[in-house]
Length: 172
Image (cartoon, rainbow, N blue to C red; front, side):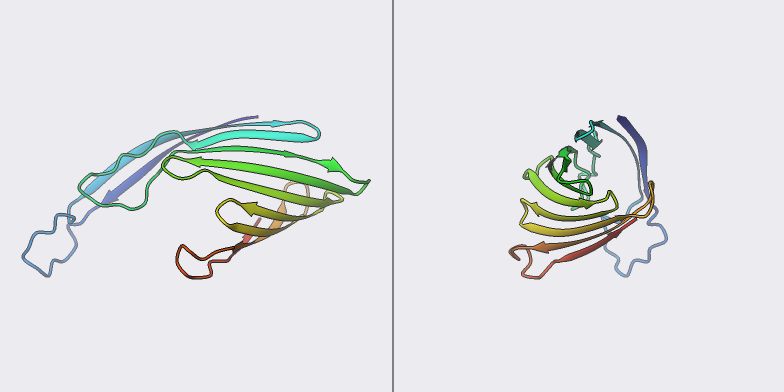
């Protein structure tokens, strides 16, 4: 499979309606307008027992206004994934998967997941990510096109903020 994505992000800020409570001029109080195009691409190869993928959902990095300090950045990402399915018996399969994520200016992230699959209906998984995250995952196929999923991530250390940043995720 080959996937292509094209999009245009549009940003416009009209600051003329803001009320100034000081006579000093605020350099950030100016109208801003920007349109940034983006293209993404992905390749997925599926065989009976294994698959692999390579993708980059953002091939262009957005330019920022040098005079305004913005912490969020639209960085270029690359993903490389692979997985396999091993038949343990007629109803149970073991599905190991690995995902590597490279983000410009950030350390490489590796994630491994092992799924247990029962009758192609229920999946239970355990995952480990290089950024000190363990995860528990559950998935149930409602039909051939709809699945319900739940994931719980546990951060092994709290050096980032001193807080417990565990996360719950629900998906359809």
